[in-house]
Picture 1 (tube, rainbow, N blue to C red):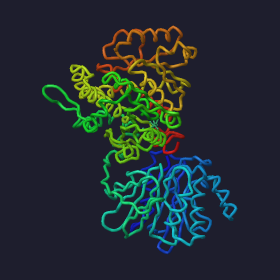
Picture 2 (cartoon, rainbow, N blue to C red):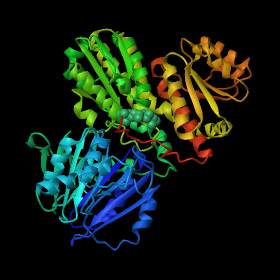
Picture 3 (tube, rainbow, N blue to C red):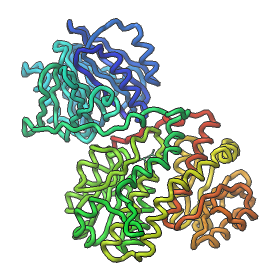
Picture 4 (cartoon, rainbow, N blue to C red):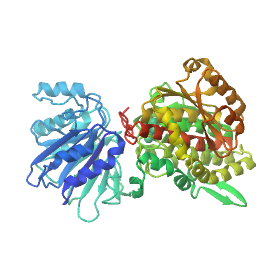
Length: 618
Ligand code: M6R
């Protein structure tokens, strides 16, 4: 979702802005733009619809050697994707330019008030209102940009990350955030600063970063100390942190797409996820999660857990529920964060809310944890992005540590989240005495073997690619699973929908007969996730129900399963593993399947239409 980049310093700004926007492309966008100011105070604005490469083409005519600039990738909320609606937006006088991520909810009211005072608007965006409002305040109060921004933001209701420049001061950026991420890179040595929606455009220049908190405004000026003010309480202290980003995660490493790279990265990153946490000890295995150790009392005595998350992270949460209930015997609910935040929720004394998020910036999840905190719940974050908003708002938590995920379709984050949930449930189960020690040891041993088992699944990539051809002509697909693998059916369907644009439904296999069975015919591919677990024989009956209605079935089965092979020729095998860990294997062929269908349909795998990597608006 919208990306912001900015720079003030001594270097030519244009390559920094374009390079930075390219690093943020993964977030999803539909247009891009930049504003550059020269030392003499000349401002030039370039905008283009579509890819950053289109913007880059337009800037080839630019002979502005400015060293101050801001840039943006826009994901349309108010107004269609167009050059006019693309950011930056410029104030009426032409002095100020702004880029914005988020939504100003009272923009219509502010717009009406400004129109009465003679302001006109060119775009359909809520963003243009902010820059006109800042200019209006600066004019009537005769104040500088920082004071104008501080006052204007007090009048804005909603979410924002903004960066504003004034061509009359070609060394200064004023940036601010509320519920939308924004980070400042502090250049090492020569008084330069970078701003960006996340660390990826900053990391190649500096390792020092400041994450703004809600309602904070940063006054960023070349050669001067960084200043941060809260819009209500004034000057605040800030912490300069080290960027924790593995730059090799930011390139495709020889793969044609980030999504494929990230699928193939899973064996290695799951080892990273478990490193130092699952350890061989006393002839067996132990799991140590520092957050569980530190908050043992509260966790052991939790009255119940509520998991809040969205999309793929919600699917991981459904497996988390089963893991926690199985190993810890604590009642666990899973809620869509977007619903939870507006529900009339009841938080029990001793209830703990677990927030799961890859990006750590999902607006709905962030709002859900605020709602939970207001009602007294402790929040435990399972987050991948280090230093992200959700990681910082949670009371405690466990990082997933699978490296940055770039492909919009989440893959390695899902397996990482499920791995963390398994470690969490086992660690807590052991503390509570609710897990059988032999099972604890066996599941941990199996966790250590999973990376190699995923490798075995990945070896079937060519077979899955061949299988994918059948799906390119499908208009609908059904994914069916039971128990531990029902969430995998949901996840498989989501993957196909989002990158192949084929309508797909995930369903509990036995629920099919209560409705979806009406859809089955020879044109409907049905994918069964059918490992050899306690519901195996039940799912074979569900397969027969599809076969007898001439449905075309595909199955994910356990190695050496000869029974299903007799009724289904299109099978992908996964190695044997305890049932509770089987989603970590069964999801992999489904990730590959949707990838190959999208490639066969010549679609943009890493940046599917209408989607954003981190959904920072509600
Ligand atoms: O960053 P988060 O895990 O909070 O994101 C949640 C969803 O937006 C995300 O999983 C989305 O559904 C993905 N596109 C799925 O592939």
